[in-house]
Length: 397
Length: 86
Image (spheres, each protein chain N blue to C red):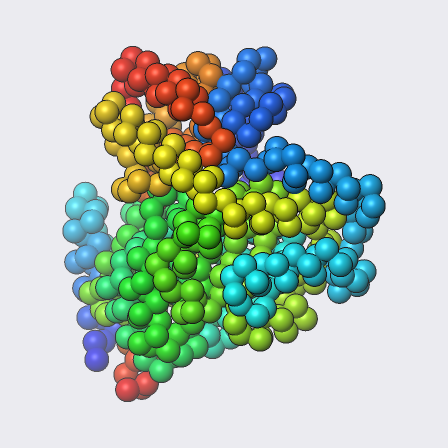
């Protein structure tokens, strides 16, 4: 047994999937044409699995701001903010996020993954407890692993199960951080946040909400599920990413707790990494303004989500539990069959995400689609035609 | 409070219901090695066990749990700590 032998099973699994055709976990985008179209295998495809909810990746104002920052400030910052200093635009973006959420404190991170790593590994230490929803994203689980806290899962979206676990903790509930997401990335469902916030108040715990998929998507001003459910004051820490509705890359956390600002000096994923490039920050500043003023974009996104879901329901497919811009099509347990269907969709010009266990909530594979405000009705209807062709020919089991 | 042996007995009953094809279960039976449970089934088992004993088993302790006896020991310790906290 050598150091590298452990990779053999993974390599074999990858090669087995590769032998069946285009490898689904690393598709080459030969040319990106717009927020909703790309060239893959030499042909134009509709992108229906990109998380580009507001379609801002090609917005001319974002691009212009990024170009200007690139010219004036260079390609990168070449180091961490603690060592190399804060670029004025990074601080400006933090102020703008804080104002947007009407919270006094904000920290911007280089990625959304690092935001979760930094928050969870630093907020909860030895003797503390993290109570997380079982379906939370891998970045949340990884943050938990970096912390010294006791980590307990509660059943997905199960308020009674959460209550039971808070009760069991007794006085330790006051040292507990509850972690949930606004929209869950695989099934597109939402946390019962009002009830969870009420429990947090009742037991004196703390609440962290990851709005990665709900920022810009939910709430009148796009502040996510906390805004849509009216619990902004009860959410102690709100985290999110720039890489979905903001069309860039980075992460943030806002809070009313002044300790968030002190966390900069303790959070290793913040301290020991290079800060975001000036171009990424400049584009995100513009995108945040567009998101805040994006009532029309949100309306279009939801209109597209309704149109797409209705079409899939008419085909008799098994879907995720609620209307959402994230649409999960539940397949069977056969990986080969799931891969075959995914290939058929791609070869007919529709790109979606193929998800297999253990990344799925249970033993089934699923196709994960995400809608964009930038899709046209024609693109959505074309996707539905392709789904109808493929599923009527090959079934979904 | 339940003894370690009582917990082992109850765990065997729960696991037997989940894997009726496995006849011989004792405290040395390995959850993954002998029962062939994958990580998802282990998590489902843990949830069921948590309800039965009214405890929350932290994810942090799971890497140390290989056998039914290991799991019983963790539950025993959790029940003890709950009792002393009351």
